[in-house]
Length: 502
Image 1 (tube, rainbow, N blue to C red):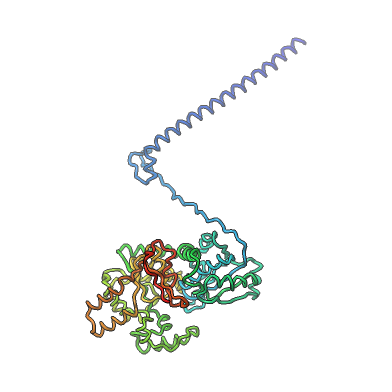
Image 2: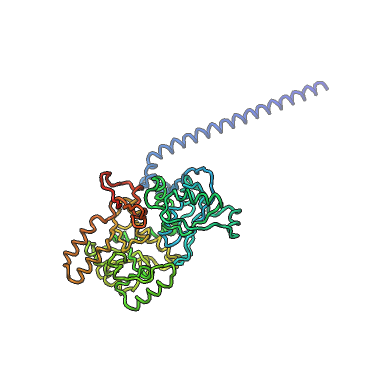
């Protein structure tokens, strides 16, 4: 019995010994596997590094590799484009004095400059700005919202270090406004920032929400703090980016034009609404004159009703006609073979009025001739989106020529100055119509006419110049957005006399 127990004890010890030995053996095998794996991985890494020295740089630089062949097939390495991470400016922290609602009026560029002004005002009043409401009741009746034309998210985030911008009011205030409790007013035109501090800020603090309407030309051109002026430029040239759809279509139009060489953009402001508003009827027949007059009387906010067209033209207050424009371009020796992109709506009088210009410059194109109907179908009945497309093409043109100094002409002029004083021919309409009348009545030869036109415009090509300041007459001085000199890289010499009328 004792022997049996002894034997059983030995057996148990033997089993435990064998189990320990097996466990030890398993651990040894696991260690060996791990060691072998490490060696293999290290070997592969060394081989990959060596291989990378031979073909890696060529792949990264996009060069073809003719000697790298795997299984008889050329190595095909495709790298995904690296999308840079957009760094947002830090939020500006400030005590919020209230909320500012704004309703813009007019066409695209009239509203554009107003938005720039209102952002600057909101910043200096330490208030929260709500994304602007665009005009839908003007002559063009464009139903577009802000986000239909501009990249609203970029607008908000790119300015967050200056001012807080929201897409809509907080719910409690929104309900209050929707119930009709809202203080609305137009600010005084051409006011400086002190007016907004002294008159507008107390109203915002009192009502918490203030609605400003008719916001065009409400901030003075000159005499404002330099950082305010630079903020106006930052909004205009950076924050107000068009939607990706508009930007892409603009690039397509520019690329199509560039394929055929340099191009000139002619902002031919000879549309029905412009002629009816201004009362300029040069070259129109009696039926057209009557139609334009009826239209002028149909809009009560067009205050000037009885207009002497001939007198207004001689004062340089009418847009040049297509015929006058053709003479001016020829006199300036613009190449007859250059492409001319017409940035405008429908020209009043159609082909009859465009015949002279088309004869002198046969390469006339429009967005409607460069793009197909499917490209423009989303823009139909959206004049501001059409104007945005023309704006982009105008910025990229080799030469920009406006025939009238309206809002688009002025804002594009200033933007082209900002981009490096790109060539912009600013036609002196008063002098031109005088010279044209002399030439067409044979009082002046063509050579005399051409020389006089060239001499008059030698310094009207968008070159650096001091902004004209007229104290107490801001409506008659140079427009800030046409020449935002505080924001331009290249400034006129300090010794150059400042152009001021006292």
